[in-house]
Image (cartoon, rainbow, N blue to C red; front, side, top):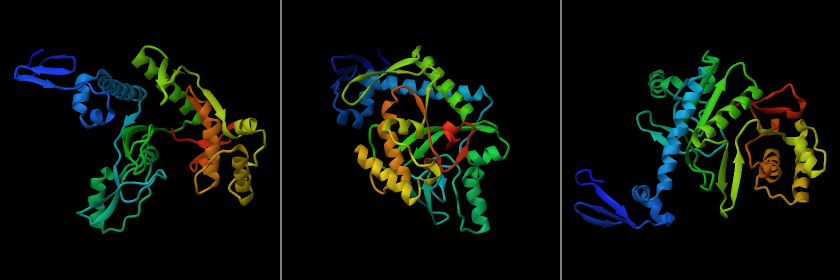
Amino acid sequence: MSDGGGLLGRECGVLCSDNGCVCVPCSKDPEQRFRHRYLDLMVNEGPRNVLITRAKVDSFIRRWFDSRDFISVQTPMLNTLAGGATARPFVTHHNELDMKMYLRVAPELVRRTLRMSVCECVWLVKLTSRLKYLKELVVGGLHRVYEMGRQFRNEGCDLTHNPEFTSLEFYQAFADMYDLMDMSEDLVSELVYHIFGSYTTTWHDKEGTAHTINWQKPWRRIPMIPTLEEIIGERFPPAETLQTADGQAFLRRILKQQGVECTSPLTSSRMLDALVGEYLESQCTDPTFIGRGALMSPTHTHTHQKKWTTVLTDA
């Protein structure tokens, strides 16, 4: 292949051009691959396929929501007060207004306190696209909105966490959690079939073990507290008492009894989350809904089915 000075061929890890030969090792060393991504893309098909697949995922999701009368929006990335999640934010400084600002950790409603003059407030409103956030848009009459955007969390990195990532949030008025679970099943299962031509995919863990995942709906739905009671063999106190001293003592005893570790501080929500991670999330190879209790869902609402008690209505 020639483009008037470009690459003529590639064989055995050597790139040849009409101006000579340049040796490019087809290295599998992560250090070399990630520091020279353009070379990685040249010689390894896998990374190219990841980028192509990601583009297909992005366009499919947008078409899926657009076809259901959802409106795509872009909310501010710079905020005067970090909010919407408990993650540690990245901090920056706005030179013109001489004020500290934060890169968003989530596209949800951000609580804000503006200590500025009227003129500065008007300027900041223009800067942040009139301070419209997803929940405010729904309250304002746009009953179906979604956003696919970048989030920033100044925390650690591991296999499933990166300080900069893309997330999807959508809100629909006059819908309950069951509607949103049904929509999530439809969206993801249709997306997987569109990309792979099948509802099953294969995933390899860090040890190289292959796991087959079935994305076809309906997905399993697990009520949190009843399932924990069944596994542990002990009845939990009423959910509204788990934040009390007696409730915390109960959770600490369960953790010690079961040998489950929980990092400090030992709040009720953290201890409960440790139990969920140990006993519920560990059995979720296929996509699964876990009913989250009010203790772990500060924006919860009561539902009409007792076994789910309370869950987040966000999706």
